[in-house]
Amino acid sequence: MRLTTAALLFAGLPGITGIASADNRAAYGPRLEGFEYPHPVHTHAFESQRRQVEMIYLDVAPTGEANGRTALLLHGKNFCAATWEQTIAALAQAGYRVIAPDQVGFCKSSKPDGYQYALAGLAHNTRGLLASLGIEHSVVVGHSMGGMLAMRYALMYPDAVEHLALVGPIGLEDWKAKGVPYQPVEAVYASELRTTYDSIRDYQTRVYYAGEWRPEFERWARMQAGMYAGPGRELVAWHQALTFDMLMWQPVVYELPLLRVPTTLFIGVHDRTALGKAAAPAEAQARLGDYRTLGRRAAAAIPGAVLVEYEDLGHSPHIQDPERFHRDLLREIARDAID
Image (cartoon, helix red, strand yellow):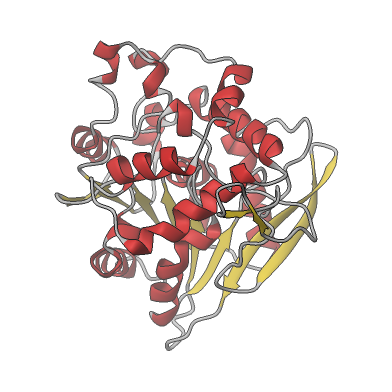
């Protein structure tokens, strides 16, 4: 993900509704007020780092014959629980209860002042959410940053993970070791504030959708742009800068051989996501985000992992080709049903 688009989502304060921006496009509050999720939202309130915080989440019951299993969906850095809409529908139809949270610092969840972000901390928060719902184990599906978080979750709580499904996960390489220079949080924040709808659409077209743009992609680009057009743009940009820093300095790639849960990687080979890539020297940029190589290397490193490659897709196969992706996802996670 380019430095100029490292943080493109999430926001809100209660009671703020969609606002018309200068270019007549929607604007949303700092906790994404004004943008409607596809299912009712629930709140998990708890204390973290001596602050009262809220995790907003979706809890969707099976629409097909219930199979007694739960799927936990972890969103990416430039995504929200809502962007799992089609995956939620597919899993619910297949009999799964689906939990899709917004992580603290993102989307409709709290963005607390002075919060210290850590992948382990977000995993701990997520485990607390599931515990509050009486869920002992689940399939864990993580996309982009959510894939990196899902790996940390599985390393911390292996007994709670039935199957680990990694969809275009970031964190399969150590960007700083490959030449991405340190970016002060203030510099990342300034870059975030320059985010526009046009920069979002350009980036998504090239990286998420392998060079194609279709009308159904528009909703998510508008949602992301609206966060930076609304009254909470500075708050959103600051927390996106803080989480950028978290991801840069908390690699998981070195721990892939330690994963001990059934794992499938879903890789669009046109994906070129690499955190901070735009700030790296040209020779380093050429080496970053090669997902054909990264996916195969990760599958070889994770014991027993299965690799599903999409020759024509990019970073977001669940949005670009949901029917094919969901067929593959349901096949893979069905292999590990607990009797």
